[in-house]
Image (cartoon, rainbow, N blue to C red):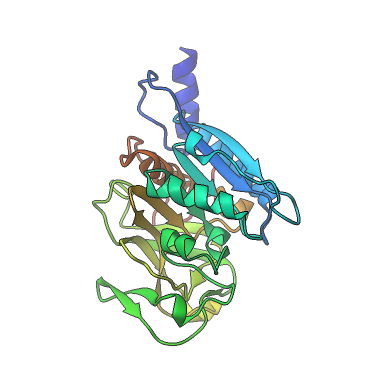
Length: 290
């Protein structure tokens, strides 16, 4: 009875839960943080709580030093998936090698918001994340990616990578309704106030666009349909990339939490077992968790 009430309460909070089987051991997930131009001390606990409430994940956190990464060498191979909430100084060479091997050999990776600003000089990382911004990125890093007239368009125009207008609510449009992460989600749904990243560019190899949003000129954007959710295949590994999640407000959106949970499960296993919550935002009104 207690487990039924717990599950019902979680559904009321709009969070996607794993199927009510309870037999399998939780997937081990590692959040990496410690340096970021965003408030990782406030957002990492939300990421951890969101994942653990599904019942699918056991989450650890690896935190770098505040000013350098000396001695930072998590054992990535102990985990099914790594969630990056990191945007800071380069990791030690051996740690970078461990990370490449982890993903290339089948480990999952989830890239959250400013984690795509990281490591502009690290070619393998840029391939893993598909698209990135800032840090001196430009046409040498790869094209801009846009969604125009129903298809993904690669734009090799010269220019810097990474920008955004004023924070605002915006509507995500589904580009691939049959992908396991997106299956069952509305064609269009409104996200809470957040930064809408635009002008991202990168190799975008083995790239699948899941959802996009129009970066409105009225808010300082490009006026184009920019990628918001996408995946990358890197070796045997799966990468889920969400450009949402600037701060605590945006991370408390039911849409953000649902796609985070489903994307993390997919990155770890290649499947999504979690149902879409009964309470999920439509195009007209965003839905924060209570």
